[in-house]
Length: 344
Image (tube, rainbow, N blue to C red; front, top):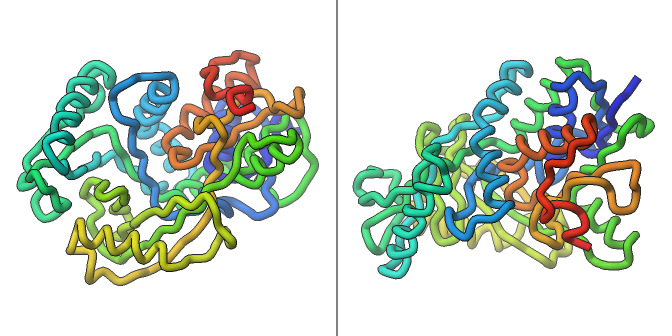
């Protein structure tokens, strides 16, 4: 017997499945391409918050999910016997000029109230960060304690292992039994747009590179629009591009070389690190730019969880929770801006 079928074995699909299993449901996950075959199989894993200002439902939801993340991934790892690579080690960002400094100070004030004392947004001298300080024209950095890192591919494999340990089935084919959740990534959004005759979501390609450099106990960096993420396994991920138009979803080109060059300019220590892997994939982006969660717009007896875009892993713990509320209990706690109607 199956209570819930999740179509898609990426971050959202697996997190919804995990939340349902945790509540006693019998769950199967079906993905013809296997676990983490899409953008959730990437290498960057920047769990970075939105700025603490102009607060809205999306920022509040993400904040709550980032606060949930440590307990969520700790339990997944314990059940799976595998590491997700999660660590809440914070983030450093250079402050470019006086205008940026004024904005950073205003956001520090915002964080004191909006982040409820659970995390801080500080301004520190770059010298305080030691050799892991990105180039900063002002000599100062923003340091926040809310940002975390995760290894996306490893996190999906850990979730899949935890689900199997709890009796869930993960397969590449099968019948969609019970309550069905569609978490099929960017191709699912394109298919939905075709069905509805208008664009409700699409894909944005990203490219990233993985270096061999052990800075596993240090914070992530964000400099010149580039994420630099030290992973727990002794690697550093650099990413990513943001490509609305692309010919091939899974190939690399000179754009990732330019990203790596910008990262090295910000952090010269990266220059001598060997390249282990280059990655490319397409992230699902709903028209509203928020995750698309709730009752499926074309199938009133089914559900959708899609559109994680660049913040899918940061949103995943709470996405799983609110979707399980809806699917199993009929309790709708999803923000209005996340519902499919917001993208229609």
